[in-house]
Every structure is written in C-alpha cells, then in structure tokens.
Image (cartoon, rainbow, N blue to C red; front, side, top):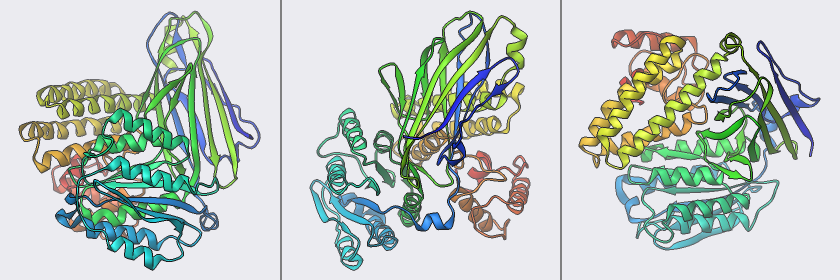
Length: 519
C-alpha cells in the first residue's frame, strides 16, 4: 500500500510546519489539518478543536469517460401511499432517466417492495434497457412498507455480483414509515453496518413528508451512502440525475478515518458524522468521495492538564481506495501542540478560521438538539434553546465578526418562528416540511456543505442553480442558469435584498433564501 502523504505537525507559539513525502500531489483526496489553538496553557482543560479539510480535484473529461462500471440495485417503494400526489409516475420517470445513462458495462437490479419484497429484475448487465423500462412501468401501488426487507434484497443483489473494480451501491427510495419487517432502529443500524462491511453502501432518497428522515439519514450514514430529501415528486428526476452523476465521478471509496488520542486527550467528540470507538481509536463513518467535492470534519478534544513542552493530541489515520489509481492510499497525520505557561503566547497563536468553523459545528449540534426536542413534543423547550443559542452566538460574533456566524444567527431567528408554528400544529404539512428541510440543511452542514443556508460569490453547484432560477422568477437576474455564483448573480442578489428591505450584502443567506422560498 503506497503511503501518499505523511504530515507531522510541529507547532510552536508562532508557526505550523507541514512536511509531506514525495507523491503527495498524486493523492486522489487532498487533506489539510488545523487546530484552533496550536499553543495551550499548562494545566488548563479547555478543549482544542481539530478541523480536517478534504478536497478532491476535478476530473478531466478524459478521466470521466473512463469511469468504473456501476453495480446498482434500485429499491423502489410501491406501497399504497405512493399513489398520492402522482408520486409513482414521477418515480418511474426518474428510474428510467437513470437507466438511460447506464451502459452494458453497468449492472442493474430492480427491487420493488411494499409489505412484500420482489426482485422484479435480477442483477444483470444493462443490455436490454427497453425490457427493464417495462418492468419499471409495471409498478403499481399496494400494501405497507417493508423498507428494510427491500434494502436487504438490494444489498444481496449487489453483493452477489460484487467486483472491486465496480462502483457498488444500493439506491433505496421510500415515502413512508418502516411498518413491516425489521423496524427497530438499533437493529437497522446493525444491518447497514454489515452492508458497509460487504462493500455495499446504501444511498437513501426520502420522498414527500411522511417518511422517517432520521431513519433514512442513519441508513445512509452507517452504510457509507448519501441521503437526499425529495420534497416534491417533480424533483425526483433531477435528484436521480444528480446521484448517478455523483456515482460516475467517484474518486475514492471504502474510506476509513480514525483518530487515536494522544497523551494530552481524555475525550473525543465528532461533529456532523456518525462515529464509533474501536479499541482506543474513534472511527468516523465516511461515504465515498467524488470528483470536485470538498468536505470538512470537526472534532472536539477534551484535554487533561499537562506540563510545559510539546505534547501529542493524537494521530489521524486516513485511508481509501483510489478509484483511478487502483491502489489503497494512506495518510497519517500526527498533531502535536506546544504546552506553555505563557498566556500571551496562547492568545497570539489562535487560528481564527478553525475557531469559526468549530463554533458553527457546535451551533449546528445545539440546533439539531432543539429539533429532537421538537420531535418529542417539547416545542417550548426547543424555542428557548434556539433563543439561547442565538444570544450566545451573537455575543461571540461581536468579537469574531464573521459573516458565516452572522448568517447562522439569522437562520436561528428565522427557524425560531418556525418552531413556534410547528409546536402549535405539529401534524401540519408546513411543520413537517420545516423539520425535513431543517434536518437536511444540518445534515449537509455537518459535512462542511452549507449551500442550503448560505451562498456567496465563488460558490457553485445545484444550490446555486436553484438560486439563479428563483432570481430569474423574481425578475432580478437575466444571466445563465449554470450553477456559478458570478459577479452578475451577486449584483442581482444585492438588488433583490435592497428592494425587499434585507441586508444588502450580495450573500444569499437564510433571510434572502427564505424570502425567495428556498429556505
């Protein structure tokens, strides 16, 4: 196994030096590791935050054409609830759109489920797309929802035709609650971890307002897949298109991230990802990386009091299968801080960027806790928690002055009014939509992707496309819908903000997105 990158952090009061071995530039996934306080005060137990940035270079067109073959099981909910709001016709169209992008190099299985599970099309090379399309068209709604049974049938189809060289994946769609077969969340997590060990991640797609978003997120997190919230059946085609495009651009898979704490650390908390302990190490559950992706990981390290001198925070091991290179890549990064008795040295060594990202991670965790309170019916307590969090962040940002924290405060203010409405009518469609949207935003934010709550110059992707369309509808933007937050789009946003009595900064934050119906 080639070692692509070995970093050792030698941290003094004034600098961080990073040493990399030959070959680091060839890494499929580039990493940077920072701490908020590279110098800590002797005897103190204030936590240190670690920020890990992951970046995957964009693939060239030639590399994209040489993508690995796909081995997919499409697991489709055909329960009775799929009859409502024209869900099933849109689902069929989305499935056939995905089928249209596959070739005979790829394998596809179709599983349909309600209270029964049927392998409608056993895994086979996509050599007869017209016949597969007929199978999809024959789906009709009936029965309850054996979600886990359908998922396991999909895993069996993919695993039975597993090849290391292929991108192996189950795509699980549901619009309802798991009310048949295995329904216990702990048992389901155990089953999806087994799927991950077999090399079969499960991507989940929740459709509408009735499904269990916590369960669907858990299945994705613990199996190494992705999670999508499809709010409107009409969005099904675009979401399926986005997922298969992501699969085509897979750059790194079978990702393993583990942190082994050093002599100075007594506890580890991971933000934004599921994690588990393995011996003395904390293992973080990560999904595959794709071309052009950026992701972050934030950890909070609780410290023991230590004497002056260099001290180890721990070792971060990161490994993955390099899809293009066909090798297992490994990186090891040791974090060492300087323990001092000089309080001025500690103050001067603070890393502002990591402080901000860590503050956002802590705020998101508290925000998520307020949603759990709301789920449990404690809406007044949830409201108070959000108000307290907003006040805390406001006081903290008075010293830091960062726009990301300002926009998070803006989000909390908007969401507090939604909490009050949801508490008054928890079964209302607007309340359920709020919960799913908010959890989706937090799910993505935990991975460093904040496009559902804040967009600004330099951003790109599907969230920017949504903004461009909304600005066109508002009569403020006449440029292309290309997913690029250009200067023209920034000017249009600033003009829209001015016309609607919003802070005119050209940044599409929560208040602007809310006014456009995108929040």
